[in-house]
Amino acid sequence: MDYVESVLEELKAKDPNEPEFHQAATEILRGLRPVVEKHPEYERAALLERFVEPERVVMFRVPWVDDGGKVRVNRGYRVQFNSAIGPYKGGLRFHPSVNLSIIKFLGLEQILKNSLSGLPIGGGKGGADFDPKGKSDGEVMRFCQSFMTELYRHIGQDTDVPAGDIGVGGREIGYLFGQYKRIANEHVGVLTGRGLSYGGSLARTEATGYGLVYMVEEALKCRGDGLKGKTLIVSGSGNVAIYAVEKAQSLGAKVVAMYDSNGYIYDKKGIDLAVIKQIKEVERGRIKEYAERVKTAEYHEGCRGIWAIPCDIALPCATQNEIDGESAKLLVKNGVKLVGEGANMPTTLDGIAVFQRAGVVFLPAKAANAGGVATSALEMAQSSSRLFWPFEEVDAKLKNIMINIYHNMDRAAEEYGVKGDYVAGANIAGFMKVASAMMSQGIV
Ligand code: NDP
Ligand code: 2IT
Image (cartoon, rainbow, N blue to C red):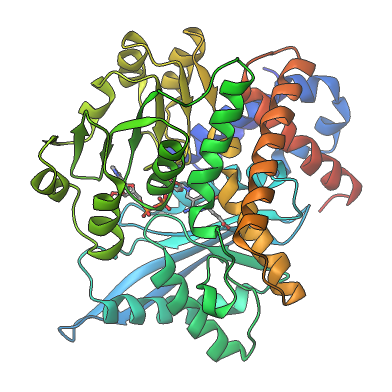
């Protein structure tokens, strides 16, 4: 058994109940095989064993009182995975499915994503098995305050800087920041994705979706093509999905389908994003309501059916494992040419293999959705310098970062003999900097 497989075996034996973490580690480590073959010193330094072991894991009780006076208890997490190249950085996810396996897979991905961004940020991730859906603002606030009452002692602007993810948007970041400031007595950039009136950066809200589309446009441009006239499916209807649709439409693409966790809408005339924003950002409603308001649209219960709709480009922007091998085969059969991952690990290992065998251009999450965290790092820079940059300046930096990531992963894939395999390319390009920093810092 080679070095990569033996590390994977050991990891699965140590934590057998972490399937999402195993999946992410398998994708990453197998992509790194050409690197460890070229660098035998990495094995001598047990670099991969150290890379897959978080520097620190914090799990904590989050008690709060609901509107009916009932005491509720959730479980909170922060995985401080790797600080070789900068302070831990990564989002917080509030969703009932959250567990240690999910936070560890997200944290591992985050290390390489943050490295790819070219900015000095390490990898971390956190969250809770709390469901903000159906909760009042007061309940969400009390939950966030309780969560931060424990988390504050583990984070700091130079230590660990959380942000949003699924279920954590502007409202939650506001409540979390308010509680941090109250306890720590400092107004600093300890969280990103803050509101514009208290230290946030312009373009952070749009950054992940816009960044994804900037990379898609660059990949198409390098093939003598562009988004204009293309038909897209964008899954999800949250922060990432909405701003991916906005940018894709502004570049002349037609988005025909989106979903939330209950079902999908299909609007062959092209989705009216203003209606989606009203339902999702203002009313916190369900996507079903779109079909009640827009006559050309159909609504279907369940999510999977979305991948049977013919499209040129698919942008999965909801959650992990939304495209499995079967859905990937359907997309390929219906002519998909490019898949760009807005969500983290939205495609299963089987699904990735289907796309790659079919010659579909596959832009993996850690590269394609890095625009969010990259812009978070720009928010940190603005906080430290106590300045605000105009929208156009942040957006131009974001675009430049996404184009650079695309070419770095493309080059890395070619250099290591796997041209066009961006899964391996992104893993290699992201890992080289982390590996170099870890090797320089001794056995830590
Ligand atoms: P939001 O909470 O804003 O939106 C999530 C969307 O995905 C909602 O439409 C939600 O539907 C849907 N969704 C969530 N879980 C499921 C599920 N199990 N099945 C079907 N649909 C589901 O989150 P974001 O847009 O911020 O995040 C989306 C993805 O992008 C995640 O994978 C996240 O990790 C990733 N990401 C986010 C970044 C950011 O800056 N926010 C940066 C990089 C990656 P419903 O409302 O019904 O639950
Ligand atoms: O997955 C991600 O990159 C995010 N949720 C954003 C993290 C961040 O720190 O902005």
